[in-house]
Length: 179
Image 1 (cartoon, one colour):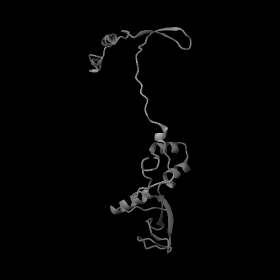
Image 2 (cartoon, one colour; image 1 turned 45 degrees about the vertical axis):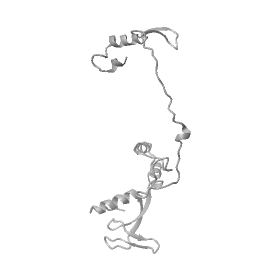
Image 3 (spheres, one colour; image 1 turned 60 degrees about the vertical axis):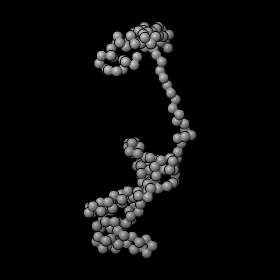
Image 4 (cartoon, helix red, strand yellow; image 1 turned 90 degrees about the vertical axis):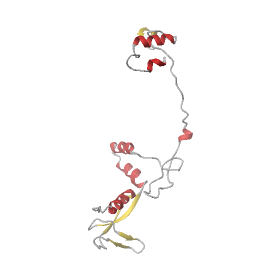
């Protein structure tokens, strides 16, 4: 029976398959008498009956269960670490995000992707849109770009956004936030 899988051209013909089935003690053409389970009527059809191998997977709920409310964060992007073994967060991926968008649940989307992940407070100059320097203990704010000290607002962004801004600034590209 193994030689029938060698090539799709010459070996895979009804006669060859029938002969191989007969060698393995099955009906040559697969003609078996079957009965309709609902009506009890006899069906006369070409039906092949043979063994099917099933194997149960050993995935158990107790081995897979995982939840996360608070835990370790990555230093670079301030997002939860990945993986159950590291007590990491549950991944809320692109498909989950698309599903939430399709249902119109904007607050849930903001909560999952921003509030519970990597929300970060920055101070932005209203005049030029650059991220300002803020000393919250002394209540001093200053924009290095336009030397503004008064028109500075507080904005919450994902920390990954500030990371992107820092990388762009390192490449001499100046991103600005309009408030």
